[in-house]
Image (tube, rainbow, N blue to C red; front, side, top):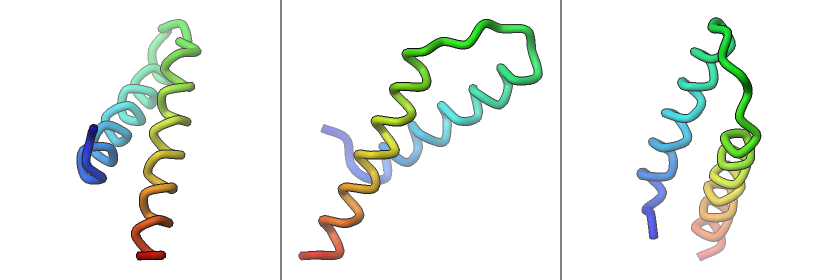
Length: 53
C-alpha cells in the first residue's frame, strides 16, 4: 500500500509523462489514463477520510 505522499508523487510523474506525450507523436495509452483517474480518486478518498478522523 502506498502512502499519500507516494500516491501524489506517482500522480505527478504520470501527469508529466502525459504532457510530454502531447508534444510528441506518441499514441495515447488508455491504461495510462485509467491509472491516473484511479490514483486521483485514491488521493481524494484518502484526503476526505483524513479530514473526518
